[in-house]
Length: 149
Ligand SMILES: [Zn+2]
Image (tube, rainbow, N blue to C red):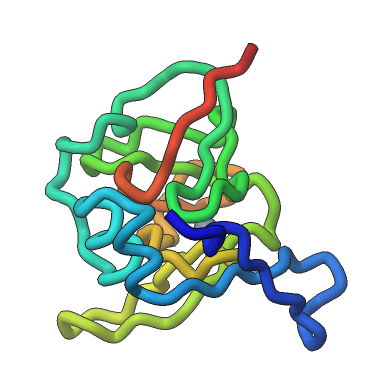
């Protein structure tokens, strides 16, 4: 491994509270991620439903980006949607994630990515529980879980 793992680049035009972006080559990402993580985060794959290790996780703690470690979701916002992927009603901070219109597969969906490293996380749907009414449907492979101490 080289010291290429800590390359952060300043974001002069971003919002003042936006996280600093992490830019890595695809070769670097391949060396840092498992094959499953790479396919989800960098190639926008979707893991098969009910296969992710964090889908049924009910422990208290924090969910971080598997690509860059950014805090993305809190266990307080996790709920059992029954859809087969970890589901959250809101991100840990609105600046932690970025949303993009996704017209693939003949559907209009809103893709969710990590604001810091650009990794694909999943999609957000307007059918979640109150009060947000949102369901952030996130691939387990794009997350790491840190149990509360
Ligand atoms: Zn990230």
